[in-house]
Length: 355
Ligand SMILES: *Cc1c(COP(=O)(O)O)cnc(C)c1O
Image (tube, rainbow, N blue to C red; front, side, top):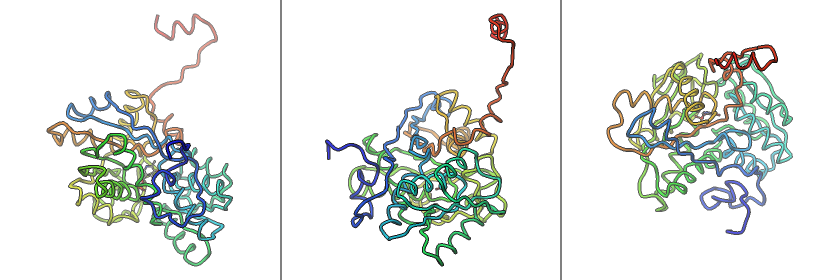
């Protein structure tokens, strides 16, 4: 094992994954993402917080979805499927399209009309997926995909597919492997609630195996206009700048609540204003560019700190779920930086520097 090149999460964590019978698997060497210490962002949040960022935007298609997708597409192939299908706010389709291409399979994605970040759409298209835009939201798309994949020989690769959750739990393993122990708190955004389910499963499995000696509190954060779990009811028209978590009726709702309650954590909501503030803070204080949804937990931690939540030193890990380059529109719109256009002379440049 030691001499083998890294070959993705299935190879690395095989003994914790339901893959015994796979003759081959479809991988793009996902996983092994950085766990970056973030001292400046820690200081901004609270003097009690030691913060680490799990940079999932460095996965092959730019989001954590790749961890689940290597499992889902490998599983579909093992079962003899030739077509995979998903509903997506963007990253699931980008990932499914990449892994289907890698596995020599066809991919069909249903996206909400006009509501997907440009980079993600570009990815699905360039990998050759059939992209169908429906006049509805993510929840409508998922309902349709569930029915179609039930009736036809097409593999469903949304996170309602349990092998996706198993793949995604490996991020929790990597955190414990790197820290040598579970963190006190793990925070992450909650959309369809697959990832919060996956992390809790991963932390519990490592604890049960004796690899960590404690379990973290799980803190999940939703956007104010798309916070069905916090509000206690599905939302027909979820709204938020964080398009990856613009979901009104999470498929893994119950298991998110279990993760919250079993871990002694919480699920709270934060405003878009706070999300954008954290988005810029991470980019400017740490040089980390993640997409807006990824910063929801940073916004949430800041809000909790203001409410006095942190009273003693804690190690906090946060999943930064997706790469900032996926959503250039939001980046340009909110960066508050004016693009100056000046004559091509040294004098004009010096003048604009304020000398
Ligand atoms: C999918 C996604 C989420 C939400 O994860 P869920 O498992 O649906 O809760 C958050 N951020 C990004 C960037 C995503 O792609």
